Image 1: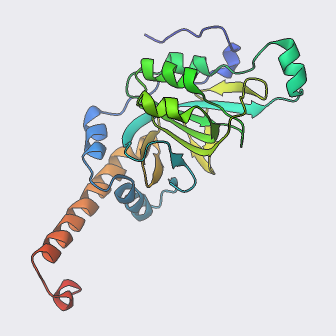
Image 2: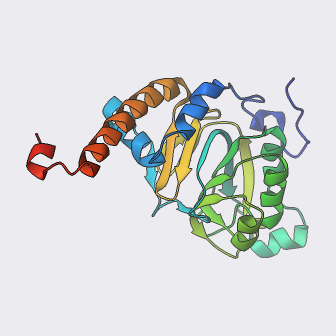
Length: 238
C-alpha cells in the first residue's frame, strides 16, 4: 500500500509514490562482490552504460561504508529571496522529510542539491536512519557529518558546508529524475557505493550489470590465484 504525503509539498511535486523493486537475489548478488564499485564500473564499461562517479567527487563520510540500495530521489533548488528575508518569514522551503516518509528499509536517499549549501544535517540523517535507509548521496553539501557517522548513516557528498539549507534552498520534487554529477538517476535505480566511488545502475539494467560483474569478478579471482601460486610473469601475461 502506497504511503500518503505529509502535506509539505503540492501533489504535482511527487513522481512515484512506490518504487519498483529489484529481486532480492540481484541485490544480494551485488553485495557479494569483493571490489564493489570497481567491478561494477568495469561491468558498466563493458555494457556501454555511463553512470559512475569517483570517490574524489562524491566523498564518503565513512570510508568503511559499503551500500547496495535503490534510490529515493529528491530535488532541491536555490530560493530567490535573500537569507534575511527567509529568516524574517520563518518558513523553510525544505521538504526532505517527504522523501524520508516514502523510504522503505534498505533504500538510499539521492539528492540533487546546491553547491556549498547543506541539503542534510543531523536531524534529517537521524530521520533517515530511523526509517531504515542505508545512507544518502548528495550532489551538493551536507553538514553535521560527525553525527551522521556516529549514528551509522553514511553520506556521499560533493561538498560539506556549515551553511544551512533551511533559508537558502527549497525542495521542488520527490521521486522524479535527478542529475547527480552529470548522471541521470531515476527513482528505483540501483546505487552502489563504497570508499572508491558511486555507481548508478539503471533499474532495467541491474540484472545484466550483475551478470557481467560476476563474470569479471570470477576472472579476476582466477588471475589472483595464479599470481599467488608463484607463476612467472612471462607465463602470467600469456
